[in-house]
Image: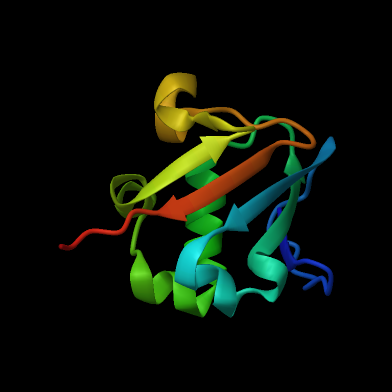
Length: 112
């Protein structure tokens, strides 16, 4: 599995993929300011789970790791959309991703 910032890729082979697919993860809010163009592309094998994508992003992106320590933290503190649909409807963190899928992470803002 590889993680790369768009449009300037990082080359990190973390998993040998038998069938390659690309998933895009787009960040909104303040986190987007710390990632080139606010999005990352992840190359991996078919059948990647939302949980694994978030684990990889937390591991590889320093600023994201400062905000969230686990996929459960992201799920609790942000609206996560898979192709425009809340992952709560698609299977949560265990939702399976396919080639060309887009995840959007929209941090929730609290206060008053």
